[in-house]
Image (cartoon, rainbow, N blue to C red):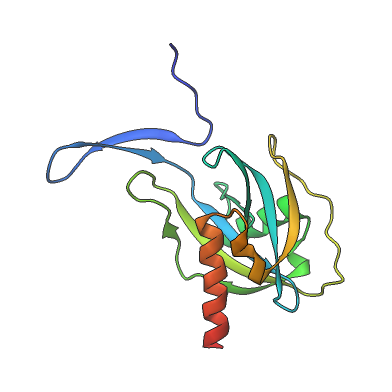
Amino acid sequence: MNPIELKFLRVRTEKHPTTGTTLEYLHHHHAVAVLILDTNEEKTLLVNQYRPGNRGNLYEVPAGLIDEDENPEEAMFREVLEETGYSKEDLDLIYSYPKPLLISPGYTTENLNFFIVKLKSNEILPKEQALDEGEDLFTEWVNLGEVEKLQIDLKTVFLLNLHKLKKIEG
């Protein structure tokens, strides 16, 4: 049986610094995730796509990998345009988490940069999506109070709660 060639993940091992145990982990590119709000901050734009870890479709905030030549903010605006059709000119960046967070440090090197943006006007219509090869997703505006009733992931929950916290702080 031939090993599977992986496009984004690299399996690695290293020795634990004190016990000498072999640790297995995945080396992975860093990524971005963004909560997109309507002008009134009452709705968010989610993507719905198939996820193998869920074995089904899932609602989530737009997200994606950071290319080698990009900084996290550039990657975020590129991913938003690709997945939703909204451009940087359509949005105001209202919050950027101060540092990337490790997704699951027990098994992956990936870290995630978090952003919150808001449409400049609810009248703005998105352009056509420019999905990556193999992507099959659709977008849907969802009332903020309804999001947690959907099948969602941890990054989406984190960004929703971060937005709530920022609103409380004023």
